[in-house]
Image 1 (tube, rainbow, N blue to C red):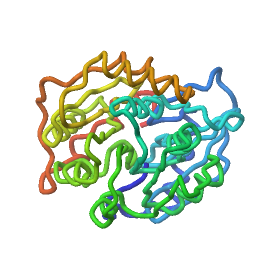
Image 2: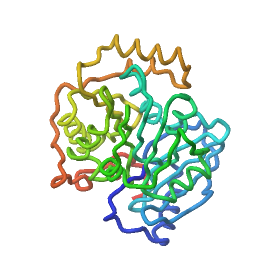
Image 3: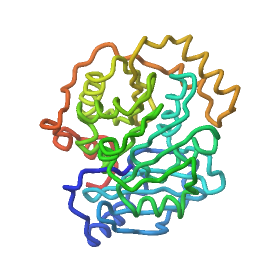
Length: 318
């Protein structure tokens, strides 16, 4: 995460304390769920209040997580293995990389929503010919990603403090892959989930470029998100990732299973990535029917439709 609309009011320290109590009572890391083996003692390492988020760095054994508070609940944004920085403990972070199989070569990547920067750092370290630009609204998130999550910017990994949509509007650069992973607690900020946003993202893709979007599937938002993406791009594939889905959108001829398998095998053979693409592309589910409401800038009731906090984590204290 965390690119979001500026209309969100800053959280108070009192609310942050209530979130901490709720987290300790629940004993869970919420949002993008991840497994770190048997239950171990958990502790808060650092708590920060930024202009946009209540942010908690939490330790569970060898793992650190970046957790955001929203409505007295906690949602995990990123996780890292302190003894193995290239591990991607969160399933959807691994699956976002499946987009690399959709074109012969991915040289430039834009990530909207940095969080702990796990995916950006993994791509930076695994693909030395790739340039990654990560855009993040919250400067405290950028600070903590570098402090705890091993992220080190250089000429091939650029960290930009800016709203993701404004970056697309104001900057002329184009990319082979745009990854959208921006959440405000349980939902995507409305201005990053509209037809106009995806149209602008499409303008910033090179010919043959691909968009990858992390989508939470348990609410009405899922159908609308897929419908909105499909209103801009000719093809949308989805991949299940534990509690989330990764949507891959692109134009041009529809990719065949054989084509994706061949490209995945070629990348795996050339770079030997930690998470082989060949095993990911087999989970592809092309979207053939779209039933949701298309979101536009003047109609995107994302928060109203979302029910993640009520349904997705029933064991959370109410």
